[in-house]
Length: 330
Image (cartoon, rainbow, N blue to C red; front, side, top):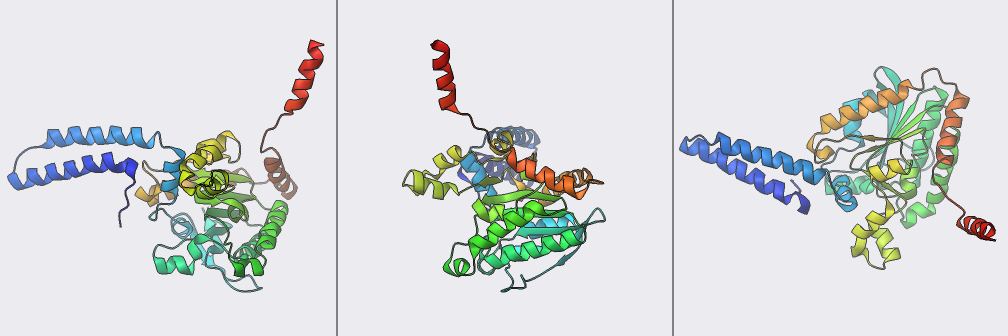
């Protein structure tokens, strides 16, 4: 099923016109190549203009596109010899979190990612990518295994948030995420995270305490969804677009604020237009990042991760500045 957003309608209209001209040229046996060429040029220029100036809310729409590649897609396209591991050895298996071991350029790694479904049935099975506590405990089990065998860890974030249901709370959702935050801080092997779609709140951070945090161009990473923020701040969920601007959650904003370390380029229009190209871009950056940890000792790996999160955020003591100014005037 093709989904077209409002801001893409002008492009769709030109594409329809191009198809009509091609059909007419074939049926009537006339040469319309010049007209078609002009329209294709106009369309390409329009694409550059539209996709080059997307608003925060428009990028969120692309991040949520149902045909966007998910963790399972990237695992197939990027890694070799993937073996999925199931269960948290405590309660059960959570299909919303995909875990396993694999190879990247013949180097053994552990891979963990949120997983959504394509169909309604798959989404119900995977809970729309919203993990239960057993999902986070499964992820930590695989991370501990990776640490034991000295394998770097790669995680893919794509969730609107951890599941807030009663069953999840009864089984210790907050404790499971908090434990992951604590334990990931001390994991002695490199952890590299890629935000591939939605990055919502603690549900995302539960597998995101990493040495490097990368973000696909049209993904977002935020403490709360725009709809949730709008409902709290404006008492109106329909103001999600305004909330998205205020939250500074796009990849460009995040890079500027040093919340992420690098933006990974997507095909024009979004990752859903070309899965293979997007996966190739991710693989290139992952390989480059992993190479930087060759020969780095465990203590330095942990220290780098600690300093990365300590250095996020800037503040200034405005009251002190005012007092200083007053002192100078006196």
